[in-house]
Length: 571
Image (cartoon, rainbow, N blue to C red; front, side, top):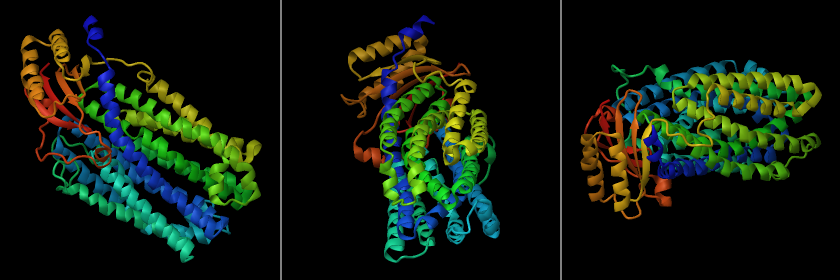
């Protein structure tokens, strides 16, 4: 329609999306800096205090950590996205029931998997390519990790769930505390007391346990979606598998990373024995470092897209994808360029003396850094697909990625030797990226904005000229009765409220949902100080109704880190 072009202005909604994304992005970056710094510090302490052979044991045990991450990811990402959709529709009671059942499922799965691995620990280590030199070190480290698996999984899952429940500040504090405890434990245990490698694993478990205790503060707040209730399933609730389904792609990703790690260790140990595993351990730490930027930059996609999706706002989902992807590239590209030009900066921190490692690591670091750009692109698209109920495509992309990775790594092992795993990972990421763009039809929105189901999209500050323009745009797409309801129940109350300040940025939109319903939405921001970015705000103690089914009345609610006034009109 012609009026769609004349009533669409993406600028203001895009500004609010970027503003909202900072509430997720800044705590995520700071938290991941501390969280990913911990294992790097642990590796430095082990290599510096015990030597390169114990350090190589970290690479042997890493697949077990990835399996635990898969459990935490299934519960954390799946539950987090599901409750974000509940936030979009306003159904808090369902969100609480889903959260409670998800936590119970994660606990049972973690205990069962850890018990099996403890019983078959020696065959497991042989399968993971532990060498005669590092076998005892790997066994000691593995025991501690498995005994402390529950806080590891719950901490990993809690990061996603509480962030999606609008508490990224608490997640940040928990990550910082976990990192400090972990780092101090490694320094005291390894450098001061000169304990065995198990002390490093214990420091990690203790840090994660402290973080879980900090998470408990979230449940003292009045206005939260995640709270413990009686774990019953009521009519209309999704089953536990359906509730966790959005986390399936990322959980499968970790399982596939486990397989990839095993193949990588097979090739490297075959080529250079313990030196090859040491090479793998350094690269694993580099991947952890790059994850600070790839994961945190793609982090806001899930809660923001799932909220717009729950609202029925397809234009908003595309704007989130575009805005956050461009922001992430601006963060990641300078880091990649620095390490590609100066790979020795990363090698130096591990006190590497092995001549084979010194010769081969610079090239490996360059390839892994360039590959991080494809990893970020894939993560952003997978998060988008998971938030819009298209997990199947994301899952297939991971299957393609791991299949290509294993085939390419094994096929290139003879001609390329120790460089084969890095080439294999790069080829696999490129193939997965191409599949996602084509099969997921995800080209749309990366460069150009699309109105989709937005009939009106505008905004600005609430001066007389802007308000008059909103009123005219509304009259083009709603009946006179509906336009009067918008004016009387949204615009006039907002103009008279304390939220309407001279510098307040708003977006005003009218969307038409797939079922024919229309909704007029006024969105506006809250505080933008560093304190509020990091610590968030206390919510109100009023429960919302199921917002998408309330017709003709203004419903006030939080929307991610913004505020929203909305009227629904029956189609």
